[in-house]
Length: 138
Picture 1 (cartoon, rainbow, N blue to C red):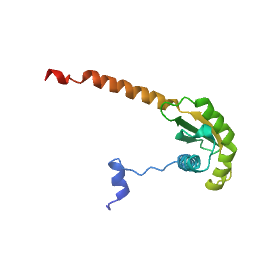
Picture 2: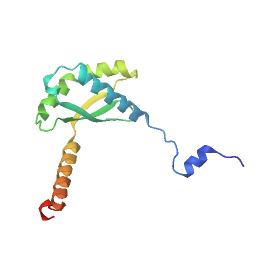
Picture 3: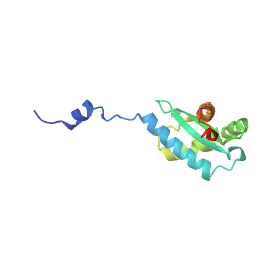
Picture 4: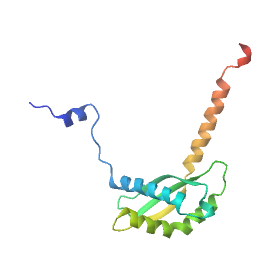
């Protein structure tokens, strides 16, 4: 009986998992579009915008790009219009960078999860302040 390292790794929960192609393409799209926003896009509506995540369909034909705004900014509709105007430019850049048969259609969405996370963090901070013992009693 010979020792099989793969079987040993599988038995202790360290098996190697293959990452789906759509996930790898989403990572590249996120990197490329982030750099594009920083270096080439001159639209004022997209100045305080950051990309939070990218989800690509398994057939690689559609990409959902989620964005967030800088804290305190309330220019969501302007940013959506800016992305709509820059969609063709971004897709043609991706077509050159990705080297795929078809560049995915880009769909931009405001990431409301970021607002929810921010609200939960504020609640947790409030709770920790309430539970902290007063320094004046010691």
